[in-house]
Length: 124
Image (cartoon, rainbow, N blue to C red; front, side, top):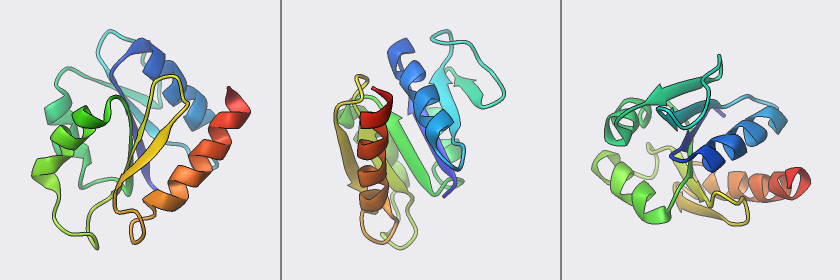
């Protein structure tokens, strides 16, 4: 599953790297500019809205390490249909809670949520 992890804080960026390193398929990480060093798996953004506009149609899953309200506001303009939208999940920056927000059954968000919960227990 082609996956993007979006982090808006330094703590979220650290968690994003931990998650990506332990997944079989590596995820592209998008972080707010200036919050964490950028490497080959990371891309910095200055506008979260612009970032989501670019990546929403290009990834099968988007994992936000941010507040659920932020994720909902960012994806709302791009939601089309449950058979076309990517899986969207939200994780708190402590890695304690994972919520499936969009495309749960068809898009695989429910399965990915279970995988991430298990994964987060191992890396915490």
